[in-house]
Length: 277
Image (cartoon, rainbow, N blue to C red):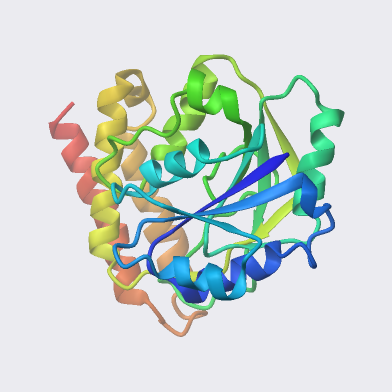
């Protein structure tokens, strides 16, 4: 059986859309072959009543209120299935996603980790919009992947809950798989749609991502050969010169100030990394 883990935090509007896509009446996989666990990090437990009233086939569990990494781990510990499918509450799973994951278990019996495909819902409309994309493989984004439960909990010890913010914990998990020489299999038909999201506070979220990156580098200092001053300088050039300046007019300058904030923070990070080698 597959256990679908959905971490959530006070956004029932998005969770509702996600759960609608996982309804046994919608999914092509038989309902006796999967369960859905919503692990709720909100203090007022908004999702609990939502599930009770509209999604009785899904299981609600209380989160640890220690961030998304801990919340996902909590959901995994409550899972009954041998395989965990992680999907974020702001994603829209395709109707065949669970059947594709289920079939992959017999198709690739020696694989412990499967990457899902992540697509956007439309063309980008603002420079301040963001969305993870994984259409050809190579990214173990936490919003869509499947992993063996025993391996995840007992060998990997789950997501690292020490990351200071909600960023880089999936990159860390992927890198730990690399260190153990664990190969992933990309399933192009295990699809979720991740709609574009406008980042309203680009400064704060970019700062938090960088602080999580610093923790990642402290944990894996050998990665400083890749993530360093040059890395952020190239990021600045690609983002500001090749993206912002080139595409601002096409987006009618929507989100321009947020995007410039992001761009020049990359430049600041480059200087910071050069000084603090």
